[in-house]
Image 1 (cartoon, rainbow, N blue to C red):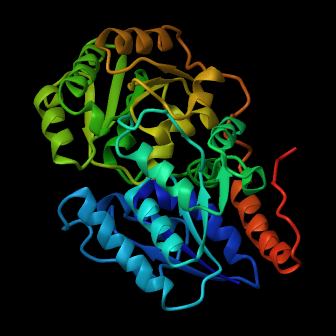
Image 2 (cartoon, helix red, strand yellow):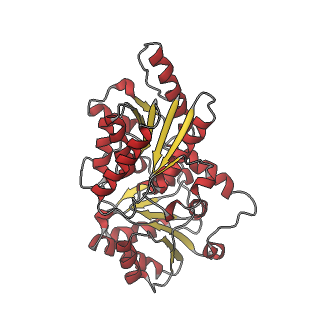
Image 3 (cartoon, one colour):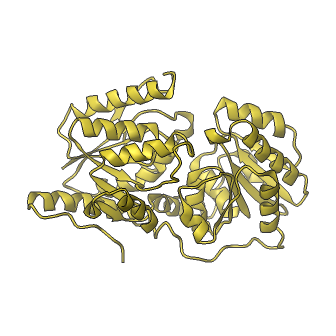
Length: 383
């Protein structure tokens, strides 16, 4: 059985690493990995961390202008790989241009597509943009849909997807987090980022990520003004790894460049980011990934977006959806930091137990066997 896994961004590496590991442990699987290079600097160190061997690399994606141009280039490059061998499956994850281009190329080349983290929806094509479009396009191309939650599976059912092609497996980010958390939790772990070695123990850590396109301009300005206000409280330290997008960096530097109580850092290696998640009192984010990561740490998260495709984090009591509201962000962070001790939210992780990668691998192998026996595919639903 030959499988190609395609990814191009930092989150995709993290979330597909457990699938790569599980498939690599299968003796009857020939696994190839395509890396589009959609993210370059942000991916530094992740291949070594998760022991991923890249067999095919794209080129010039970063230097290609326009989202459509990048999409077309990645699609062509993945098609070249698919035509170089006979693949049984192409596996993509999430909602990136690489995932959508890969799924489209798989469909047009009649290679079965498996979609990891399927079924996320906001119902609004403009938010998040263009990710909501990418998700829906991948769904049209996919033969098997690995949904992280029952709610995500419900979205697919509502769109008329065959129930036998939908499998609730949890989110692979939990698998990756638990692996890296065990590394970070070892005695003597030293953060790669020097600034993190001197975090003041008497300050309440507020971890922030922000980069969404729909927040560019005035919404991002409101978020940053709220962070500046919180930095002035005196009892907190606001830590913001600044995204590499020039639009984000310029606005962050303009508003927070000399702000008291705010630490602006370069993008962090993933173990260092997990190190911060372990110590944060609250997270403020417009990222989808942080919403998924927070429950593993019992971490409250203030979601600086108008919509979320991960309502489970709100329903489970870990997240609060506030939009790019100065007043709501300030109030939410202060409410989460009023106690003298860091508060951990107790509750079941809505994104699973950390065995999603294994379940996906088992199902891909099982589906092949069932196909050969001409038996119908049954959904893999966890107990």
